[in-house]
Each structure stands twice: as structure tokens, then as C-alpha cells.
Image (tube, rainbow, N blue to C red; front, side, top):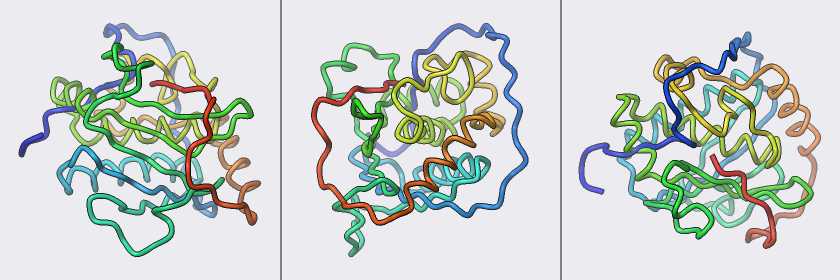
Length: 223
């Protein structure tokens, strides 16, 4: 990728028209629920940029009442089983240089993807760094866009593949209003989405067998 930050894309990139949705940021709730995320950076994102993006995503989930713990697994893995397995409260995010799936490869307005099975369970999310970087550079929002993409895709793992909304962070099409909120650091999950995620993380904090690979045949929730 080279030295500088040159990419950052966003779901389906629409015009600057507002869809009339007003997202109200919530009062932060003391984080009591934990969700771990293993991060595989295949795109070689500059370390300071990735750290800032993870912090942005952490802040978004904290606003929803869920604490996230980010585990670096590539390029410098830590000695932890967390990098080799997933479960209902431990997800895996892969930041890819570009989209490789045939389903999204030809759709250059797709910034990320999440794999969710027919029962609504998912453990794996993806961000396509070349696309994210491009939009981020155009809009001068850098790490904020990558952080919001990560939050969106992890949101699908908690809320399901059919959790897209008309507007806001779970919108499939980020337009001018969403991009403005991202630049201001004011894009959050709605109170309803936050409540549902807290309920699901809370119900999952039990002993659950880990799995080591994605389930085939699942549906994709593309951003």
C-alpha cells in the first residue's frame, strides 16, 4: 500500500442528500458486557491508523453499552488462543487489501462484509481497505471511516444479516449525512440496536464451544 493513508471506502456510496433520519446519540452506559475481536491486518494498515480506527470502533460500542477488546493477530500475533478460534463473544475481523469474494468483487461501492448463517449466527467480518481508503481520502475522514466500517460489520454479527436500516451506522448506503456524522465522531447505534446487542451479548456470555473456521452456506451482509 505504501506509506500514506490512501484508502477507505463506504458501503454503497450515495449522493449527499439526507434521507431524513435523525440519529440521536445516547447517554453512555457503563460497559459491563464484553466482546473480543481478533484482528488480522492483511492490508498492512499503518499501525497508528489501525489503532485509531479500533479506538473509534471501541467508542461506538461503548456508547451502546458493550465493551470491545481488540486482539492483534497479524502481522504481529500474540501468544494467545484468541487468534485461532471464535465463539459467540469472540469474533474475527480480517482487513483485506481488496475484496476477493465474487459476490462483492465487482461492486466497488461495498466497503465490508460479514458472514452470517441462516440462523443469524456469525463470527467473521471483513473490511476492504482499498475501498475504505479511497473514500476516506476523498472525504478527509481517515481512520474514522475504517473504525465505522468495523463497527458496522461487527454490528451485523450481533444483529443479523437483515439489520440494515434506512440511515445511520447500520445503513447499507452511507450518504452525505452519514459521512458528516463519521467526520464529527457522532455516528452511533440507535437505542433499539444498542439494547438488542446488549441482550445478545449478555445471553451469550456462557460457556460456548469454540469453532475454528467459518460455517459454509451462510448469507453475507455487505456494507
